[in-house]
Each structure stands twice: as structure tokens, then as C-alpha cells.
Amino acid sequence: MTNVPAAEKSTLPTNSSVGMPVIKSNHPRPQLLHDGVSDGHSSGSVIADSRPEPTPEFLAELAETSIKLEAAAPQEILRWAVDRFGDKFTMATAFGPEGMTIIHMLAQFSPKTPIFNLDTGYQFPETLELRERVLQKYGIAVEMKQPINTVEEYERINGGPVYKVDPNRCCGDRKLAVLHEAAKGMLAWASAIRRNQSPDRAVAPIVGWDKKFNLVKVSPLANWTKQQVWKMIRDEDIPYNSLHDKGYMSIGCWPCTRETTFGEDERSGRWSGSAKTECGLHSQG
Ligand code: SF4
Image (cartoon, rainbow, N blue to C red; front, side):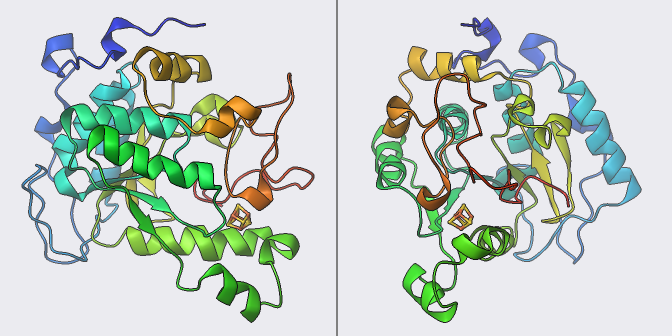
């Protein structure tokens, strides 16, 4: 297993303590589509429905920051995001191992960063249990964001389970639409993707503009490996989904997830047997 570098332990370095450039100094705050003003700190004030505007200057800042943060520890990347976007920085989690490590990191220095789950109604009970375990261990209440229709209503309206006939639409209705709603009033979101999970994710910047959701997207684990994630989980006793001990490598909704066998790609159990590989949250198409 890959050793976790000392800088990635939970005693967190600040930018200055590890010699990283302090990135936020030379750039204006993100321009907003409305009249709100972000001061970029936890106490920052941004009017509720403001969104950052992807001006050329802002995009240049993000690109420059992303390059500077390429070699930074995930905690450092998260610290930058918390300093830069304050309480308008949020995190979406499916309670996967990567997301659990980010929750663990945020709990150390920014436990008030709002964290939410896209609660499709089709998640495994073992996944939902993690909300309680996070609450008990960290005192963080992950907000469960639900689609407008319950599963029963949704299937009745559509004459049965949509995931069987049009999984892209099902993900669109039960995940993407919910994230669009959750993004209101936010400036940036953290995702737990790793570049070596899939070709789609291989090109993810550390920090970039997410045009799908009109937010800055921060991917602190982009450069981490699966081994690094699991080492941290074990070393620091981070809660994880018990289904991982039963052969599930990547876990989404139960109708679209199967166990995997030794040697299979880590995401091969998702939408198995179809061409679909992503729910659409992390692709720009
Ligand atoms: Fe629907 Fe499957 Fe997508 Fe879940 S993963 S929202 S069940 S298509």
C-alpha cells in the first residue's frame, strides 16, 4: 500500500507552514451575477442567490490556483477553498471512501462547511447509515437533499422504474436536478473524485469552473490513489460503508450497483452491462 505523506495526516499544515504559495492575495473576489459581495472568509457575506460569474479574470485565477495546488495535500486544498469561499463552499457526498476522508478532513478545521447528500431514494441502507455515523463521530449533520418526487410517486408517474429504461434521465431527475437546487446561493463545491477512477475524471483540475452547475469545483483528492484513501481510512479510523467489506468497490444506488470481483475495474460495478459510466455530475457533456 502507498504510504500517506506526512503532510496528509490530520494534523494539518497551513499554506505558509509547508511553504506553499498563499494564493488568494492577488486576485479580486469572484464577480457575482447579482449584487452580492463575497469577502471570501467564513463570515463572508454573499446574497442568497448570487452566483460567481466566469469572467476571464476569474477563470484565469482558477487555472493559476489549480496549477499551484497540484502538489498540495488535500487538506491544504480544502483550506484554500474554505478561506476563499467561506460559508459558500459546500460539499456533496455519496458517503464513498473518498468522500468520507474529505468529511474527516473538514471535521478537523471547518466542521461548519455544509455537506449534503443527493438522496435519490434508491441508496442502500448501509449507505444511509453513514449519515448517523458521521453525526456521532464528528457532530456533522449531512443534509439529505431529495428530489421533488418520492420514489413511489416517481415510478407511478413514469409507469415504473425509470432506471430500467432510461438511467440517464433517472440520474438527471434524482441527482443532477437536486444538485442544481442545492447549488443555489453557493460559490464552490467539493467533489471527491480521483483522476485515476475513470477517463472522464482523468482530466479534472484541482480547481476549475463547473459550467454545468455554475460553481467553482474543487477536487482535493484528484491526485490521490485508492490506496492512499484506504490507508487514511484505516490509520485514522474513518467510518466507511460496510458494503465495501462485501465486495462492493464503488457504491451508488442499489439498482445500478453490483459487487465486483478481483481484478475488475473499481467502477465496473456501476451501471454494469450498460454503456453508462457516470451519473453526469462529473462530466461536462
Ligand atoms: Fe436512478 Fe440508477 Fe441514477 Fe440512481 S444511479 S439516480 S437509480 S439511474
